[in-house]
Length: 445
Image (cartoon, rainbow, N blue to C red; front, side, top):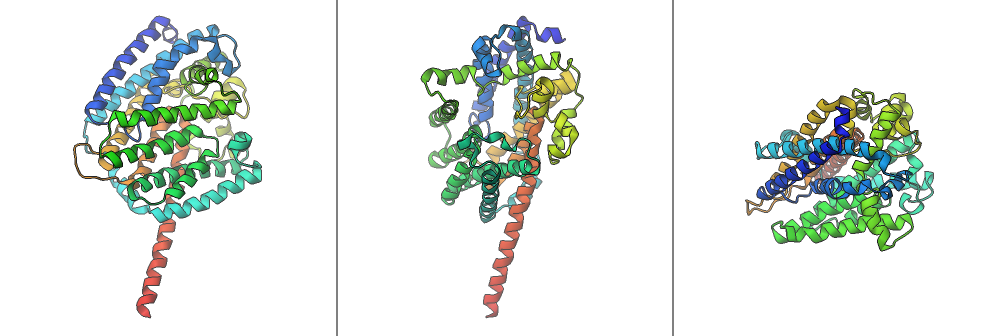
C-alpha cells in the first residue's frame, strides 16, 4: 500500500477528489450559516495550503528552507504526503458535515461547559493576567535578556527544564486571556486596554500567527457580529486578507529582506503553509532513518504525559512529536518540531486505521465547536442578540483535544487550561469572600 501512496496517479486522483469534497463542504457551511465563524479560520488555511500551495512544492525553491537544493528526489514522498493527508482531510470534512447536521442543538459536554462558565469572571481573568504577565516578563528578561520577538531568542527555553515549562504555560495563559478579554471588550465595552496589553505581550513571544489567528481574528468576527447583527462574506474578506498579509509581512521582515518578490516567495515556497512539504520531508526521514516502523501510539502517549517536563522524562525526550519529527528522524537539535499535515502522525502510529479513526474524531470535535458557535455566539435564525463569552474557554478545551488528533503536542494546552481555570476560580472566590466580608462589616456598623 505504501507504493500506492507514492503513485502520482493516485495522488492526483485524491487531490481532485479533495477539491470536490471541499466544494460540497463550502456549500454545506453556507447553507447552515457557518461559512465564517470565530473558530473555522483553520479550515480555510488548510484549504489554501493543501489545494493552492501544494503544487509549488514540486519546485526546487520550496526546498531551500529545509536545506535541500532539489525537489525531484522528494517527489515520491510528496505524493505520499498528498495521498495520506488529503485522505485524512476528506474524512475530516465529511465527518464534520455529518456531526454538524446531527443533533444541531446539542454540544458535547454542555453540563461541564455550564460549570466552567459559572467559574469564570472578568475580574478573575484580569487578576490572573497581571500575575502571569509578571511571571512571563521575569522569565524572558532573566533568562533571555529581553523579549523573544526583539532579540530572536525564541529557542532559549527549548531545553531549560522547569523554566521552559513555566514559560510555555505562561504564554498559553496570556493567549487565553487576550482572547477572552478581546471578546469581553466587544460584548461589554470594557477591558480594551487589558486586551491590547495581552495581545502585545503574546506578540512579544514571536508567535505572530497565534496572535493574529488565535486572538485578533476571533475578536474581529465578534466585532462584525456585534456591529452589523449579521455575518456576511463581504464583511469578512478584507479583515482576513489584511491579517494574512500582516502575518506574512512580519515574517518577511524578520527574515531580513522585505522585497515584494520575497513576500510572494514566503507564501508559496516558505514555511507559512508548508505542512504537505514538511510531511513529505518527514516521510523521507521516516523511511530512510526509521525504516518506516510503526510507532504504536508512543508519540500520543508522550503527548498525554506533557504535564511532565521533558527534562524529567527520557520517554518524552525521545517520543514527544516535536522531538521525534526532528531529532529522531533527522538528528536536528533545538528545533521546535515540524508539522506533517492533518494525518501524518496518526498514520505513522496506527497506519490506515489511525487515519480513519482520528480523522472522524477530529471531525466530531470540530462539529461540536462549530455548533457551540451557533448556540453561544451567533444564531442567524434568531433576532435575539447573545454572546456567551464564558463559553470560549470550554471550546478551547475541545479545540485542544481536536488538535491532539492532528499533533499530539497540542494536548498540553488542556493541562494549562486546567491550571488557568483553577487560578481564575480561586481569584473569583477570594474576591467574593472579600466582598461578602465588607458587606457584613457595613451591616454590623
